[in-house]
Amino acid sequence: MNRLTEIQLITAAVLERDLSKLRALAEDERQLRSRLRDLDGQLLQSLKTASGSENFASDAEARRLWRRWLLARKKDTEMALFRILAQKEGLLDQVRNSFARDQASQGLVSEERERLRRAIR
Image (cartoon, rainbow, N blue to C red):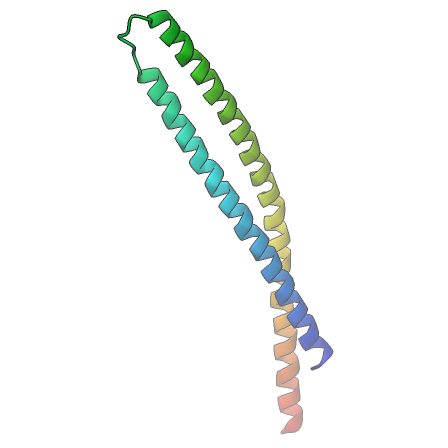
């Protein structure tokens, strides 16, 4: 195995590592977006819920506290999502660079193989 082939194997491994990290972040993003949808649904449901009970004041207070808790969870989830998106943006640049290096190394290996074929003829 020559040096160019070794470089190509290394750049391919680096690209695969970066893509694996990107897939993990994409899964985290998907889960957080799903959690946000769930929280939004619960918030909407809590706004639609009307109480016909005798303890209307205590029910209203309980709904208000529930909405406050839901809003706090939503804010925490949004912040986590923003952190994931920021990490993903930085990683996308890294993946682009890894991809470019991998393509360049593949090109160099192909050129070297072609040069060797011509030299053998």
